[in-house]
Amino acid sequence: MLADKLPDAPAGEGARASLDPPSLDQLRWHQLTPLLFREVMRLGLEKHLNQSLLENLRQDYFLALRATAPEDQEIFRVIKALNQAGIGTILLKGADLRMRLYGESAVRPMADLDLLISLEHVARAQSILEGMGLTLQSQCSDPRPGFRELFRNELHFNPPPGGPLLVDLHWHLSGVDNFYTLPFQRLEEKSITWNYQGQPVKVLCPEHALIHLALHAFSELHGVKQIFDLCLALHTLPPHWPTFKEELIRFKCQAPVYLILRDLAQLCPHTIPAATLKDLSGYRPSWAERLALNHALGYCTPHFSALYRHRRLHSWVFYVSALLWPQSEYLMAVYGEPDRTRFIQQFFSTLFSSAQNWDPH
Image (cartoon, rainbow, N blue to C red; front, top):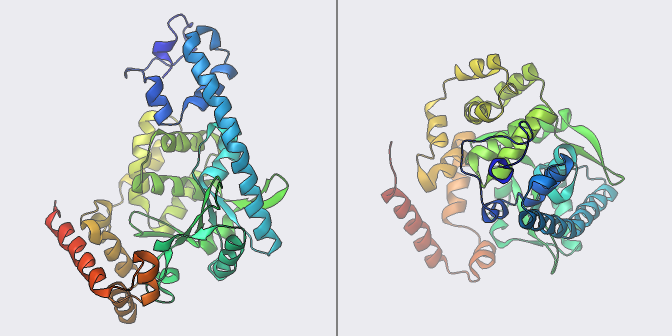
């Protein structure tokens, strides 16, 4: 990234990439300018940069400092409120990575606060968050009582007016259209006690953190920052590789994690043992996994994943009936009116559209 901006830099001070250098607009789109400014200053490279570029980077860094200060305050406020209620939390993704990988909030942007808690505490945590001014998003309403806790894994809360962060409350982690599941109990058993500005909190162990980041990147790759997260995790945490392989087998998610690590090995050579990649490359996904990995069923893939995980007949009946005939409260929350005919028409219209675009290959 720095190669074209450092024409006078001595060899070794800038990585010489074969790719075209990104523009300032590209760096800003990926939210990388604060990180780039910090690294330029840390490495003493500022004398090699065009002054206009350096000033733009500096301005973005200080804007990020100003923006992330209220975010840190909100994270502290939420953790403190949950701690006071006796609800232990595990920090996920951005809020965790800022501490352990980047060491500074300003250089790692985030839009929402992801927390993992026990399912038994979800209702109480929801009440606490709503008491703090956050509001549950309408699409998180239950089609039928108990549906979300059985077939979903999170609730989304909008911030209070002027609030800096959404809050996502998870009771287990999932990936690839919810085909793979990382249960809370195992994640909590291996979690690490941490400190967030004086408040006790937990974070995922290095092995689970890497698995979660890889699954998230495979499922929803939003931009370069996720690649940075993974590369930094490999360098900074790093995982104990035999334990990592054991946990992959436990969670049965070798296939998507291998595909991500295989590509990362091209970017971060020597950080992933060749023996680990070789072992993982020998895994052959089942027919059901291949459907999920390729998103082969389109709109229906998450439904397939849910039914594949819950194979009892009564679970299937509950799932299908809840989708086709949800309670009136759900229709009001999501559509603003209990118009069941309109709901069914939209449901089958989406289903038909997905079927038309389905590619069996």
